[in-house]
Length: 471
Image (cartoon, rainbow, N blue to C red; front, side, top):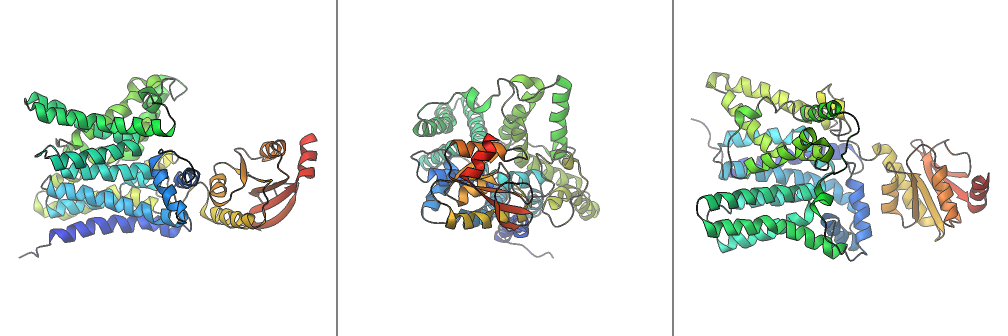
């Protein structure tokens, strides 16, 4: 006789497993990971004194910044919590709304926690992660089932916030509600259909209202979603080849299983369909495709993980093969995500061909962790010595955002391997003293004040910089 495991244990495990998994790369890095992470910090600092509403996630961070909270510390903690909450809510939906068994729900938690696509989204797409949490809460509320006034109000608030947070999640929840509106009208449920039609336009109104308050103008759908000029140069074959390659590299472990495990769900199906259609535009109409079509493809991850889990459950029969089949399949599915955590050298996997999209290791931000640590140290020292007419010159994107967040000086950045253009710009803008943060030995002019991890802090006075400019 087996031991009955309470549901609360399954839910706890579905939160703790992804929390531990996502915490691993954070613990291996002394600084927050993720390319866009530090950009959120700079936006938050800027928005702390700006009367704008968008970007809404950065605005929320700016409030915390205004109260003196160290956002570098916060962004070591918040992404693992977001990741764990997302998977917990997905498992809650699977168990409560889909009626999945405890073992199947536990399997879903494992597959999602080690999904390369899920980890990639949690790496630096933090405002999308928060919006996804709200979307999953909305799914769990299940407004289609007994749409009470209380459910309608809560649904309205959730999807209005989604409209402020992220465009891609806005599209997803809008399509979901349009689907329900059409379904209700087809069933002659006109009051329900009208309610879902209102819910469908709510995130759009929220997005436009937030944009108007911030910038004051409205934004067209083309500006928000469509790349009318095309995002690719080259012939059609190369465009399609890249699009298919990114798909296979991201979901190679799920693509053979998802069709077998596909099932219709009033929420997951329109979610999958909307993101799939967006992704396919770069194949069908590549020169007027949706903007960042790869992100649309990436956001198929959650429904795809449901289908993959369902497929494994089907394959794990008869019972005598269940353990062997499940363990073997899990090993294949989880190897990509496990490799990304940074515990071992990255395995030679298809995703390594597109490391600009799916990083081979998550233990990275805009630069190597040891370099970022040095930049943070230099920035704090600069704060003690810099005067009001001083400027800082450093590389964008490797170092500049960290410097902008940690100092109040004017920052001029350069994108190549020579800081000379940024130094010249600093002189032209009247900077009396210029601090340059660049690799040791790569700057002949100026005085080297500090160095560490092959990074150096130089100081150039106005006369030296002017002579360089004239020369």
